Length: 252
Image (cartoon, rainbow, N blue to C red; front, side, top):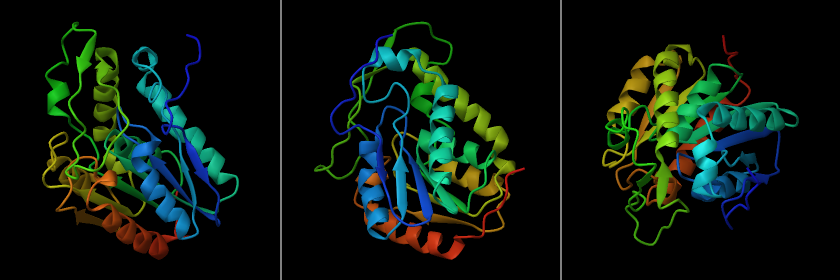
């Protein structure tokens, strides 16, 4: 397929800073735009920040249709390798499917900590489509954000094939959770209309991290990085990062 133009605002972004790197992964049908506020706030604290755009996101649904969850795993891994060139300590943060990808990467590489925001282990609205062959594209509703002033760059429909890839990565990560050993901070919105809050409880109960904590986001829906609690995410994440820098646990 001919390389497509990335939608304005949906591009990957890299913000250079000190030797502590923060890798941020957006979710399914999102783009780096959805986590840019967090990234810029982390950069303001002096950290080096990289938010890659996952294959097929922020361009055209036809490109998304050709993407696989292995592409998304590779995208995040390549971003990690780039950060590793200049950063001695690295934290990975993921929202929704990005949380699942972050947890997966934490079983393969060395991190000082992993942070998730409404990480997806289950998406009931998609799971009912698991055995379907039609339609080719699924109509998407408005992004699940409580703040009416917030906007997220997304497709108005997503390919059924891409939905299957999301279901695949969630299935893989569920089995891998006990292998996550690095310090973990899990943000969760009790009122999330996309991913059940139970997913975060399952992650908390399954990871093998000696330090793990769950942070409630009482005034946000699913896309919390753009919602009313976004500053709370930054504040708690920065405290976590300051505490755990240079205490990396090697994945095994």
